[in-house]
Image (cartoon, helix red, strand yellow):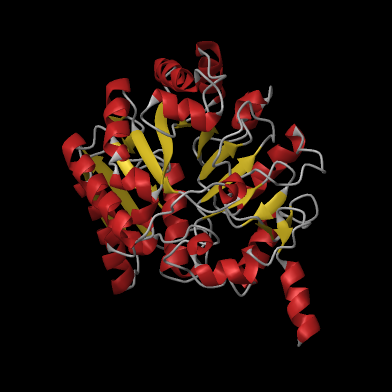
Length: 418
């Protein structure tokens, strides 16, 4: 399979084509047109990295390497690659992904919920508003759209939200706790065009997972949800989070072992971040040593499973090493978040708002985000784990401040003191 990649968002490359072909595990590229040498080398390096990684699945649609990426090669991935070149080489940031909240409701009261404490004064976005938001996201080059909550499966018209995403332009996925992921609902979502589901699993221990979720049977719901999603033909990822204790206890290996038995395609281990309800908990966050332990464990697991199951850690994407140098902090670089009430935030872990999509377009919100002093430059590290950033912004949010808190309030304060 061969696809022609063009660069509609990059005037300097208007006459350039990159032909990408998958020959088994190998990705072959042919470049036609005037291409700067450094960009030629970057392109070759980019696809060489994927050639060295075993795809999770090989299909006529392309090679699937992650739930966060469109298949390679494909029209949707061509959009992603164009945006990547714009951001990395030409320093004109274009987002690759968006997470969109579609409800605030949830059956659980998880101890780590990042959305806890956020205002519920405004009504959630209607289906028509979500359709508009999706169109505007696609217009600025987004190639991965993730629906979140709350628990998105509690929204009856979720299938209609999913159907807004043309598969030739972007992949779509849903973050879910799986409690409502019945066989019928999984088939319905697949029929609507859903690419995959990311199911939260906090611990390899059923008792611990149930306790952290606040409901007996939560672990069993995950197991059943995985089966239902796989039977429906969906890609399945498991999302978990790492603390200092879970890293040192090698919880990731135990969890991946279970996921391998279930047939899961990918496991994502996010860093526990001091936000939302987790701020109220006595949790030891990752430190330098435990992060190294986690990275070593994840590398060993990827070697062990040889691509049949992918393990991705936030600690790797923020490591600044190898291919991860192109990633770093995703906020205002590769993605942004839109809450169920339309607030535009740098990511779903950051309780700061740039604006609201009901008042100005997605493109204008993105532009303002990139103009802000904290986000106009890339960061290799997660800003929400940066003590200086937290001191300037997160710890400075008034106790009675409505979340997400407008970042412009800080700008006004600075102006008043100047």
